[in-house]
Length: 507
Image 1 (tube, rainbow, N blue to C red):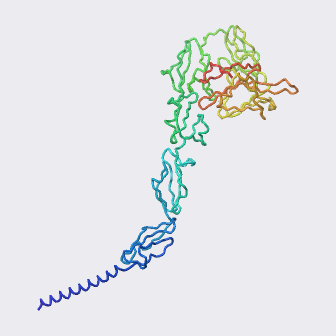
Image 2: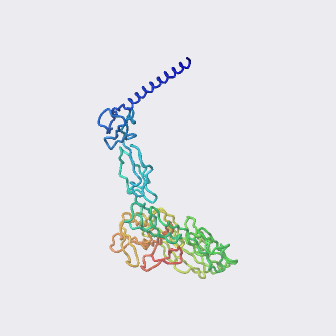
């Protein structure tokens, strides 16, 4: 009996399970066949269904897009009806982003990203050696994405220009502002006193750089003097035959002799043995000589009598107290005016004592009809022979032609040269001629002239020689007054291109 009851219970349970499973199958079948209703409205959203009726059956599709190119679907662009619901239930349109493939970029251009959202910017630039065309030397520009469109056309990258080099003469057709076009060759040399390394000074502008590379200008050294004859000698001379810029040597004499010049220390300055003056200038040095210490003064000479406005030099020193002084036989003195801008010198610059008598013509300094005034930033040193060395630190300087008490109005400036003789330079309101410290061709002899009042043929006039010498980045201007009997073929001592004072250059 018990076994019959157990079998009956099992049977009833199985019937119950079967009924539950049958009900569940019916429910699932009904749900699987449930349709989907139209996707809710969203601004700019367009929906294209695979079926043409609503509701849309199970497993039907809908394609999503936006009505304007300025917008794009956020997320998936296709949704499916499954079990009564869309897989992407609430699609929307948002402002379109911007994108660009590497293959679409202009040649030699770069971007920090290929796709950005509306309202963001990309950094657009060029590869090394190239620059954005018509840009103000910008490495990058920002380009904004605005509703799927770039705020500007992507610019072209062109080969970069080179920075303008100082001290090079260019064809102005290749210059744009302070830059030089690619592919241009230029050749330059170092300033006086400098050596070029490497020696080839030709470079080409390539991809924003001067190639192969810009030569360096190294300050020249000096050759150690080898032709020194006793009693002159060098004290502790260097071992090297060529010494570096800034090296000093000291001259001396053997016993029984003394140096004719207190400037016995010479410094190598940009390839030239020079004397460093108290004013900071380097003036080419003359080798000193040795004089016997027992010079006979029994046949010496007293100071020249007339010394008004005159400065006397002996052994390259100013003679401060000349009264009662005796100069030895064969002594040589140099004379100049105390102010070469205001006085004209007459007589012989150098005079020699010969058995109690001075050779040559006695010197005198007279107030000039015109005063020459040098204006501009400059340091002045007056040499023994009356030349004025002007270290011009600015780009230009002026020589004014003045009367002793007023501006020389109605005065004319003339210039002399060997080809044209005397020719008119021009009048200026303030009787001024402008010189540029790097224009050596302005070197020459000039005359300031003014017609005397009440005369048709007589003039007040004064001559001045100007020599512009450029070395390194500095300029040395040498001024020397000249007499009225100027010879067009005359020469005056001046510093040559190598800075020595033993050559003559026509002025």
